[in-house]
Length: 259
Image: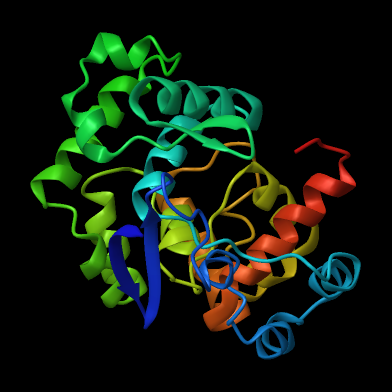
C-alpha cells in the first residue's frame, strides 16, 4: 500500500512501501508523462530544422516527471560536475540516508527524505562525496521540512511566480520547474543548449537586436540567462521544455557523449 499520496493536476503520485506490492497502477504514465498530448506538442515545437530532425530521430524521447524533492537535491548535486559524478553522489546519499529494499533478489536504496538530510550533519553529508554542496543540501532540506518551500503551491502557480519562489531557496530553478513541477514552458539553459543557440538560433537574437550584446560563450551572467531564456521561450511557446529536451539530447548524441 502507498504511504503518501499527492495529487498533481489530477494525477495521483505515490510513495511506495516496498515491503508490499511494488507496482502502483498508472505510476508509469505519471513518471513518463504518457498523458501529455505529444502530437499537439510536436506540432507546436516543430519550428525549425534542428527540432524537426531531432523529433524524427528520437521519436520515443519523453520528459520524465520526477518527484520534486528528489529532483531538487539531484540538481544540487549536479552543479559544476558531470553525470557520472552526480550519480555517484546520489547513490552514496541514498545508501547512507535512505532505506534498503529488495526487488527480484537485488538490493536497492530509496532516495533519502528531506527530513533525514536535514537531520544529517555537514560532515555526514560530505562523507557521501558531495563536497561543498553539503551546506546547500542541508539548507534546502531545512526549507522543505519547515514548510517555507511549498511544493504543492509551486505546482499550482504559474511559471514566473514559481521560479521566483524557488530562487529564494536555490539558485537553479528551470530544470526543477520543468522536470518535476509541470512547468512545460520552462527552458533550462546549460552548456549544450548554449552551443545549440549559438549554432542554430543566432537569427533569433538578430531579430531582437541583441546579437552584439550577447555573444555565446561557455559562461553567461544571470541577466544574460534571463534574456536567452525569454527569447527561446517566446519562440517555442508553452511547450518550450519539450523543445529543450529534443535539442539537449540531439546535441549530446551528435557529440558522441555517453549517458
